[in-house]
Length: 538
Image: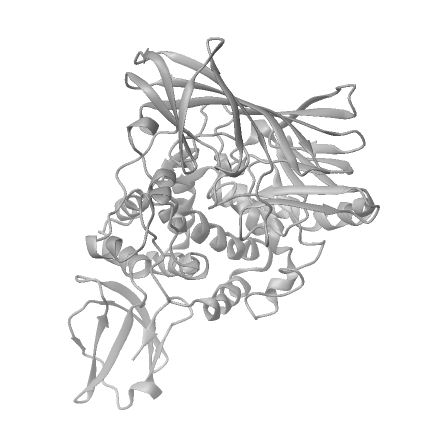
């Protein structure tokens, strides 16, 4: 388990009771004693996937440390999957299923500070996604040559959809995982980490073995099955590996060359060394659009620029790079390395990763193009519900965590008003919480400390409310007055104005202040730099 920093922010009671959360939600999203009493150290997943039957059979061996004496622990496996047996010290354990939770009973209490291991045998047909990666499940397709092309994506839905696991972002295996997957001969499985070898099982199947030495999000553990071709490259000692369909080998070589090395150079400069250096970096072609599977990034953008050939910013700038390559790789730093304790705080993943798109553009095309791109994304913000979701019930917040979150960070950059300090601060943030699990309060405390000012009202306004700060400007005699209109009390934020062509930086609060600068007409003589701040002006 990565060290968890601080407590999560709590929503008010009326917000929680207004939602119809179920026991299943609490079992999946909560941290009762049966989950918190132990710390996963390693997963050893050994399975066979039958494409014709769309089925899985095998086991997951779970190595864990006992944090408190206990006779019961909770693992998770979707209830449509079969439990064949759970073996501990060569004996079968009893268990009780409750929705997707599996409560495992031990004959005698496991002592605190001991290391234990159990093997969970299972089988069944996992859920098939209707529209991956937006809903969880497997994808079974065929390539142009009629060979199986299979992948899985389960973020939000839960890794227990297809294998037994402690299905919580609060606990990642400290010592990584091994993923051994047998598939029909003629196919290859590509999973996370390093390839450790393959073995012909003499039954029509070949097992492909992979090993991850870093902690890993359980939803990031993956399988990718196809007639793959392997392309290898290297960047200053970092292995770059691409697994693509045989028919796409030549186009993939050219396509990935255009973005991957410039992206890696940029991200390592701004966010620090690639966090999973020991496991290498892979792009793996998938039958769905993409997903940030750690060290095995799922790629399904069909070798197009933009987002399936579209520019989500509406500026045209988004067609200069492959969106899936850049965005999903950004998650290696923000989401896979820095992980949110609860998916209610998934903005920690998505806001910083969406911001990384404009960081890449700034590295390759300059500040102005990057700012046009990120401001173009504002048209995608819905302001429909809070960015932060509900804690303890596996409930994300608004999809605004992407664009609104990125625009909030761009605003924070211009509040900082010192690019050298901003990039140093962002790098320090990435390095400070590298391979750690954090929450919203941790992020706020970090930036408050770095900026020397309590940033809680700032973050709360963007993350907990559906409105953004409104700058109120009013004529006052031959001058003007100004204030912020916000849901958060004690909100203050500096902003840059252009008054009669001259730039002025003023600190605005919730109380009207009178400017000493004479003006005749507010709209004509005062320009608000809304390109630097995600705000409204009234």
